[in-house]
Length: 295
Image 1 (cartoon, rainbow, N blue to C red):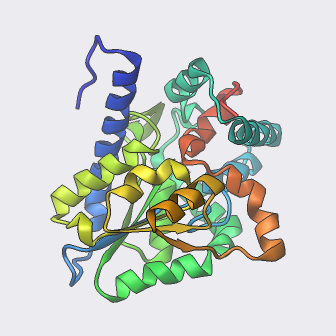
Image 2: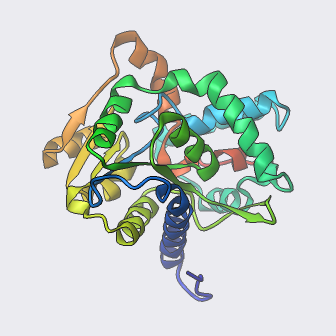
């Protein structure tokens, strides 16, 4: 889907979101074809950050890469603060957003996909595996048990999203797609991060290709950013919701599941704020280029 040369900022943003959605759906096709379930028209889509996993997966991934000298721990700390500020203020600088998008994943430019995937496997085992919400994992298993396919859908880079999906025994993943040439990262994204409307586009494209009936599908998320995808399925479920999504869910009669309790909720609350789908896919780009982002 080519971008048109003369369009307004809003139209261009929509085109980039659509491009990201179609790219994610295409990337998920091979994984989905690996296993043909009994229920061919029903499926479930799970957000990752604070829905399937405590906190932001990309944040833990970035910390692991910093430990491997891809960039510094100070870069991680700076981005952490920027994320918190963004969530509180709810605003973003278009120039910063554009810079991050254009330079996203710059720190892996010139590195091979195999190298990053191998690092991701180590980091997942070290610091992510024990952060999976048991309750959410059980919900995903319920869909698998009745023969439905289960995809993760997240702003996290597709390589990391696919790894998490594989570790959990799910069907596949829809994530932010990076540009790759001859097995090497260019440091640029294909379209926008997998966020907001891009998730809805990706699900719709995948549903058309796989013959899914969206009225028989379910979607799970913690964030109001994911209202577009939650609104398009027959069973929207909010998991560990932020305040805005909880209010929306109550108003619309959506199912609410909350696996946070007491001190555990307090402990993971701040990393969970970092998980905002609006920015998770671009986190590593911000870290890599040492530039201000939108928190």
